[in-house]
Image (tube, rainbow, N blue to C red):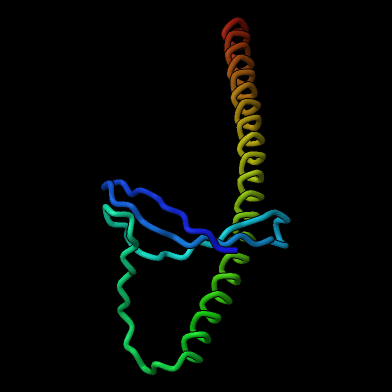
Length: 131
């Protein structure tokens, strides 16, 4: 069952949204969809959002089809977003592992370089001792 949610913007303006909860099968937890309804005036009345679409027909059937298409698109987009969020999380974990491995490798290279430098210095000293 949809509920109306009121939020306040950074500029102090209040906005009204219709919030509907649903179960997301991909992430196995509840999610919600919000639909913008309009601004809220000082009396608490919702001023409907402005529409900028050309009106092609006034039949109720076309409105229902547009709304169902919008809801279907919303579901598809939410599923894709959920999938992308999972991929981003996996990539972040992988990046963290690669960064740790790289840090360890750089540390080993620095130690090896220092050991080589010490060995080279010792060889130079031994060469200077021998005629």
